[in-house]
Each structure stands twice: as C-alpha cells, then as structure tokens.
Image (tube, rainbow, N blue to C red; front, side):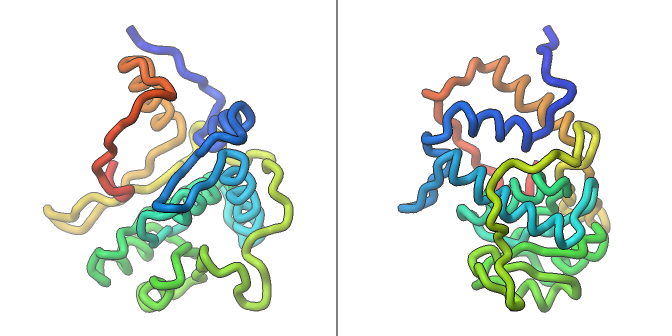
Length: 209
C-alpha cells in the first residue's frame, strides 16, 4: 500500500515539530558533544536568520564543505530553514571537483569549518562563512533570535543538490525537492516500523543519496 505523507510539509518544518515534542531529548551526539532538540533548533534558527540576511532564498544553492560534526547538522538545517538548498561537499574531494561543483551549482555562499577555511577559499570565489567562528568580518554570524522563522520554502522547493560521481563524464547535479525526501523517509518509517528505541547504521557519506 502507498503510505500517506504530509503534502504541505518540509524537512525543516517536520524537524521543528519534533523539537516541540521532545525539546530536552538528545538530537545529535558527536564524540563528547551533544545538542538537545531545543538547542539544535535554536542554533539553526540563529544561523538561518543570518543566511537570509545574506540573501539566501528558496531554491538557492548553498555549499557546505565540512567533516562529520555538530557543525554539519547545524549547517544543513540552517540552510533548509533559510529556504535554500544545501550542496554537500566532501573535503576529501579533489580541488578541481570541489571548484566545479560550486561553480556549476551556482552557489554564492559556502559554509565550512575553521580547519577547512583556507581550502574553501582556494576553491571558491564567493562568500565563505566559518561555522565554528562566531565573529567574522566584524559581526556575529549567529543572530541573537533563536525562534522559528516563517517558512519561505515549500514542499516543491529544492532541499539539496547531490552530484554524481562523474565516472562517465562531468559530474551532474541532481536537485531533490522536499516532498521527494519526505516520501522516502516516511515510507521507510512506515515500512520498517521504526521507533525511538531503534538504531540504524547509516554508512554512506552525506554527499551520497
């Protein structure tokens, strides 16, 4: 049977609903670091407000060049909450591939980490924001307001752009809309009966779909 799924929701609005239900539960753990749903939601809202101030709008691609970390999750959700589409980039990619992906996607902004900032600047001529540096260019990249933003993107806006391997030529960007991701995730939840007690091994990189 075909499971019903919400036709009017996005990844970020569903996350906000979960944050309201379980604000004090752990949302993401990395090593000894942890963010609750409330903390993650507020941090992503603060960054999303600044991304909007920098001109991010629906369907606009934003590069995210990071290693696995809390910053990765914050960056992804902040881009989505701002209304943009994230373009995940593995820092281990060759420099030519990174530059091609950023140019081909049309990204004007890249989120990265301090230990990757020089690499990002070499591969990208646009604006680079470093997630683990609060102060940049004389201002804080995290807005003081951590409340939820009014959504700009809808179910048929692009959530992310995944690039193919390029083994048969140049890599190709595949634009995936919110409703497509929700269809997949909620089908899997329905099919396998997942609950808060289950653990799933996700062995692929965030650059793979």
